[in-house]
Amino acid sequence: MSQNFKSIIINEKNGKIDIDIKKRSLDKLPQGELLIKVEYSSLNYKDALSASGVKGVTKNYPHTPGIDAAGVVIKSISNTFPIGTRVIVTGFDLGMNTSGGFSEYIRVPSQWAIKCPTTLTTKKAMMIGTAGLTAGLSVNAMTKTIDLENSEVIISGATGGVGSIGVNLLSKLGANVTAITSKIKKEKSLLDLGASKVIDKNNFLDSTKLPLNKGIYNAALDVVGGNILTSIIASMKYGGVIATTGNACSPIFETTVFPFILRANSLIGIDSANCSIEMRKNIWENFASEWKLNFPNAMQKTVNLENMIPEIQKILKGQQIGRVLLEL
Image 1 (tube, rainbow, N blue to C red):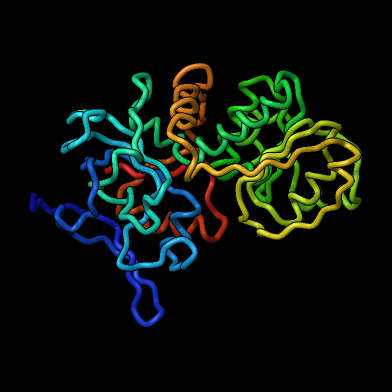
Image 2: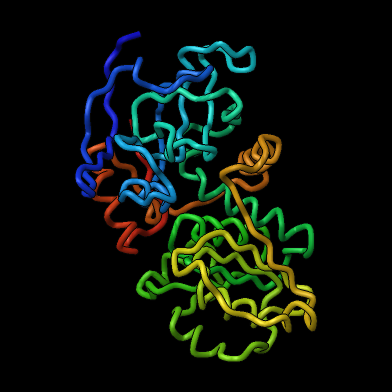
């Protein structure tokens, strides 16, 4: 096939990063068993890092970011995914050093794909995306330790992708959710998502200065790391579980052994990029059934390739709210 298609292309020249939309040929895509016509993708913080030339994410340019994609298989040498199969691809190396979902087509190994559940459209799947998969893995980890019904759960970075889906999902599962945000003007949006309480980030930090504060929360979903994670750990009840998923604030945090040896707290790292296909299938089936989200329209938007470029800049500046979908 020599068909041309459009992609967002990131290029590096003399240490400077250039971002543009360009036409490509299918024969320039990497090798893989599945050629997929992408219908939707979604914007994640890692995509913005890739588009900014962060070498820890993407080493080789020119490059197309987009760690999420959902669409239809149009060419296959896999018996598992015949032509016409609707699929979801998230994580692994997609959008990092393998041409990603900000493109009308992708070609990937069949081991990276799962079938899109029948009750989810590809658009709905990308509203969930890696952000939802990360939140879902966090919830799955919590339920191995505590009963979420009527539990007290705190979520940092609550207006972002992982945080906002976490608020929506955990409230649906019966938890009383406290949302931490630096965007206190979005308090109503967080309450609409299902939060029981919204706390300004600085007020939360001011109220949690000790290695062990009053134990308030049974579980936590931390997206940002840094001093927020330090304060969350110090505020857990006995037997509490903290799922940590990101480092938007800082990868470095300080704590003591006391929350762990005196309160039997657990700190669990969540990785959605390389988790097993079986785990992915379980989480996606949950989102298609008992975890079905009721995500407000005010917390999601859909853009085309041209309008995705300014959205990348917004998420880097901490100005992004909720979920941004890319329609192709």
